[in-house]
Amino acid sequence: MKRNSSLNSPISGSAMSRRNMLVAGSLAMAGASFSTRALAGVFTGKKLIDDTDILNFALNLEYLEAEFYSYATTGHGIDPSLFTGTGTQGDTTGGKKVVFGNGKFEHIASEIATDELHHVMLLRSVLGTSAVAKPAINLNALGFGFQGPSDFLLLARAFEDVGVSAYGGAAQYINDAGILEAAARILATEAYHAGNIRDEIAKPKPGLAVDSLDQPPTTTNYFPTDNNGLAVVRTTDEVLMIVRGTSADGGNFFPDGLNGNIR
Image 1 (tube, rainbow, N blue to C red):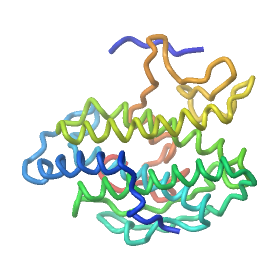
Image 2: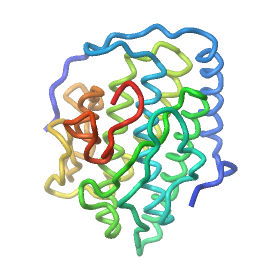
Image 3: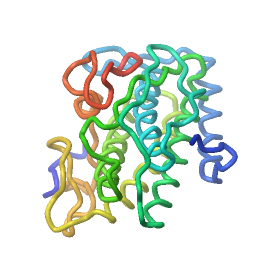
Image 4: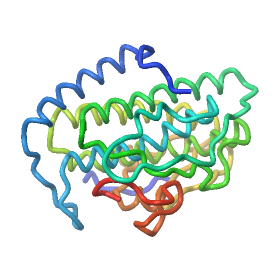
């Protein structure tokens, strides 16, 4: 049922597609503005955050996705040169190469892996020296994701839907128009991924739901939209409950917590 709501092996950068080049241009323009002016803070109800904090929160999530898809498709993580930054850098555990046995699924996974790697690269390029380091990541936090195509698709679906909701929920707090445009386009890419994966795993009965907002795909409800036809969005706290758990000190996919002010 739709949720009611008011209208309120590292992948080479040379493989960047035309759409990623366009996003890169948007982020480069945003970065020029980002680096030359003080961004106004936005009070979210708990703390004063700015565009730097929002982008670094997104970067933590993109590290998680990029590592997941890289391990699933290659057996190892992304280029360690992309791990540096502020905060505590950590290792990635729990991942391994998936034996897909299906050329279609393997191609889908590899294409998504490329996109997620590029998201990490693009966010780091805008943040520059303000970029957070890759924190410790446990890819086996839920106990599944690497035991074959079906196992992989279950976790991929959760990651993509959470990613879409996270970007959607953060949009209202972004001050810089160029950064907002680029974030919207990353969200669109995540939505392409989610739609493809949801179509592949839709079944008569819902699968695993990661929280009360989650709508796993069924053969009668392919899309996670509300009664206004709007995509479900999550607050940063709701996203953190999924990826980190209840303790700011760490848990779930981030055993030592996230890096940055939104953690």
